[in-house]
Image 1 (cartoon, rainbow, N blue to C red):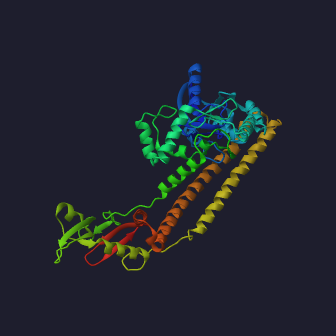
Image 2 (image 1 turned 135 degrees about the vertical axis):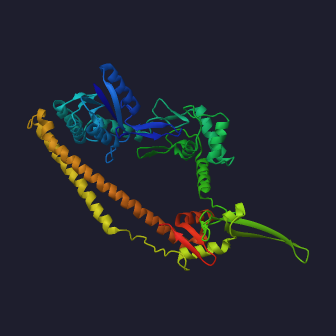
Length: 489
């Protein structure tokens, strides 16, 4: 007999990164198996019962409102590829939806495809057990709610939730206490930034060269260094689940040092670039209109002696045919860099003929089309909610005995078919909306860049100017007596 595994991570146990650069789990940390653990249990179950595991589908984040691509693929696989008697093995009924009604819907979708469903926690799930599971998980005072309440209370008390950050361990009172071996590394990291003036790349390089490793025995990365330097836990502040508790535990770094490091990092991020004589604003964008070859930036320096005996020097910058420059072939097409760049800017600003007319459309997207799509989305989502209400009513009736639980699959078949049709329609509308959003966003960014060129150009540094040109200009075509600037669509 064949078995397919469906693994999913309940939405209140999301994977996050700790200060060590490693993964940790927050939220439901007690008794909820990870995806790796679920897979191991699935394989062990198959071996123990003589099933042949043929496929595994998974969803790493099942937060409310998020798509479940793994479940969608599983349903498609069962409809199109799976043949014969098949079991689907899950961790628990709760893994099938963010609420009890959604989980029942998933069960009915799977059963409609002719499979048997086995929960490693709840046992075989059939029509008789489905109503009991729905009742159990519809209880507002469920285990997950109690766990969540306990975590929030621990946060209010400043007690550790999940893996402690690098430099700390969990003490007997549940709060962080300093791990001196790791704390020494934390102080060294802050010192390298504060006193030696090193950036995060060089700090990571220095630690790795000196043989320091993370808690998991790995090399330090720029990301882990950056996050460590930004984490206020090292000044004794506790931040979890929206709760902030100052002076909650012993600090490793003083607040003045922490704030100084934060300023240094901000200054590094906002430091302006410097334009060098060899920088060419239109590099890679200029083409010769005569022989269709690229024109590259060339710098020439000339020294000469004046009649007075003094030495003079000058630097000349221009764009020249690449074939002429590199291979000494082709015509000698050349343009002074400052003149060509000024002409292209004039085209973009609409101050001179030769460039394509660039009309600003900021705030003037296809609002009618967007509004129509928004109405369709709202209508599609309302349709799904209405179908779910019909399913919930059916479950209430079945719990009261009419229809009997044994007839639940048959009674729910029409509702499931209606829901799948509505879901497919909504997915199509969402795809259309995403395409419209991408196009509208692309136009907005283009128009904003055009506006910056026209209004803020002189206040920008060279890297910022170059970035705008690269995003706006497709190519500049140079003829003997004219220049054409082609903007990107």
